[in-house]
Image (cartoon, rainbow, N blue to C red):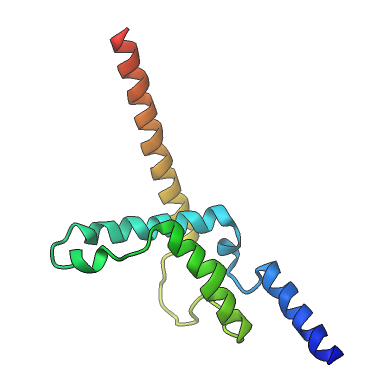
Length: 125
């Protein structure tokens, strides 16, 4: 029984360390950008009448983030399964570079909105 408790404690520590996740998903902010990027891609399909019904039931980026990271990958790791980069010898896009670009695009769009608000405010005065 003591051995079972020790193994359970080791499993708990390993899961809490998030070592079952790829490095970029261990960072809450970076993982958030990934799910926002996915949501942005899915959003394009929401406007397509052929898939609109299906898209109505899609989770938000926040809900997907919580479910995938905090539940799905956690439970899979408890049974020995982890998410890892494919070993297939293909030219894959670099997800971390893509996330950096997406984050910068989103920040630039936000800054443009702020700049436009400041300009409008100045013009009203």
